[in-house]
Length: 228
Image 1 (cartoon, rainbow, N blue to C red):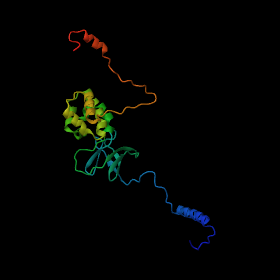
Image 2: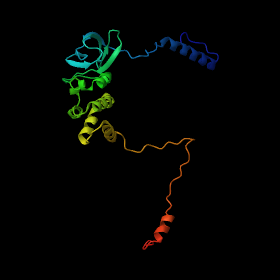
Image 3: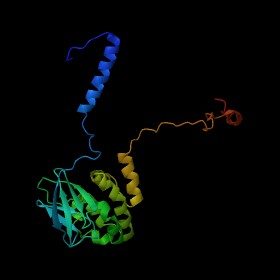
Image 4: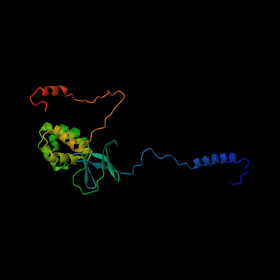
């Protein structure tokens, strides 16, 4: 408002003042925010053991079967650890562990190919003790073909953090096959409520079934005591 304006038309003056204010706002506009979240981490080189595990901060983390006894890169964040190969390609991401747990942190999905090819080797690997004892006992008693099948079935369950539900199924039910396990697992974990009906313009009309019992009544009427 300085120098003091000369106002001959108040409405015109207000319109012009609004335009000047909007232009002045552009002077204060900040640059757009980045599309990706800024990641804060420390990059270190680590070595894997013969089982393709790395060790960091007294914890063991899995990588992938094709990386035994080699060097890899480790992105260390406050909540996660990101393992990279020598080309800086992501191999696996783990939640960073701060407790004093002795069992390794494992991403079973990366090992499913190796497990399905050599399922018996899994029983003596570092991955096996990470499972609940009930699951361990069941796997030890499986025949070769059934062991291969159940391991493939357990991978998505482990990935979703629901291996405890799988252990509960084996404790509550006498499971003999993978198909039996899947049926019992679904019965335990899936919502038992009926699914809502879905209709479309192409859905044929549904006529309720009403049983007709006249013929049966006529037959029964011909029997002794049939009309009682």
